[in-house]
Length: 95
Image: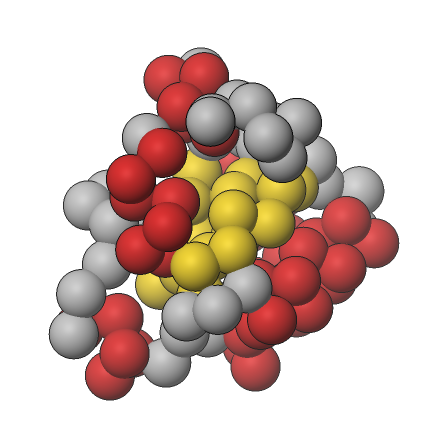
């Protein structure tokens, strides 16, 4: 059920939300959601300004949901509307 988490990811994406995959470039190259941006969690702090400039909600994803949760905390602290999409594979099936 799409609404179990309380977040309709499909609607967010249709409204222009940006999916940020916070895994390593190697992991990202191994498979990712089409159209997502790869900004590894260890450098996301320095990308905050450019992410903020996009002016869109953000959905973070990784392999399991742990790194995307950390990234969510960083972006939320910067005042960005952000959702933890959990695993990229799981999110892909919801959108």
